[in-house]
Length: 178
Image 1 (cartoon, helix red, strand yellow):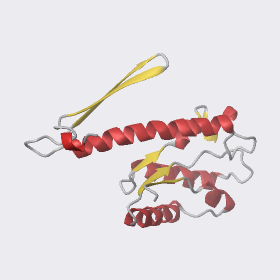
Image 2 (tube, one colour):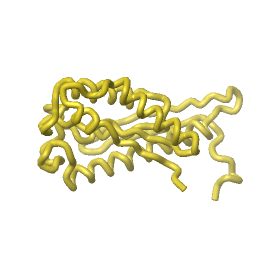
Image 3 (spheres, helix red, strand yellow):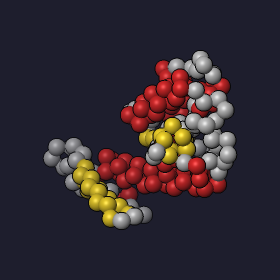
Image 4 (cartoon, rainbow, N blue to C red):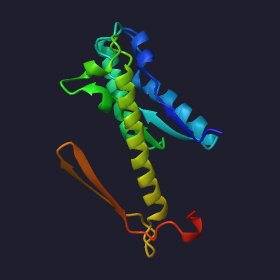
């Protein structure tokens, strides 16, 4: 039985629409429908941001505007269990509409093996943070107020980042620990 669903959808809908792609509202309605159906079956849904695709044969600025609007919604929505930011992981910092050249397969639409590794790493890191925050939400409520208070701090050093996450609750009940 499936417990999680990751949705990576939309770039072909946008690109194949050429000069008249579906609107951001139409794509978001589709995401909402998938979330609702999955959640009704007890499946947690995670939405992935739409990858950059400038350089692909069907890239157009009108489609880029739709992709950008949908990605803003994905990053800020509260309907899904979370999101995975493949756009941030794969985009070229010098041209955010385009994938990093060394991560694309040659068509500027699909990742190559290195690109898929980067995407896999983004999923793992997202899962770590999702689990930490979910456990803090679930088990970190203060005894007197019943409110979850979470402190998050980050410190960068050279090529790594130290992240501290702390809640103020009682933690997982001993009988639930295995």
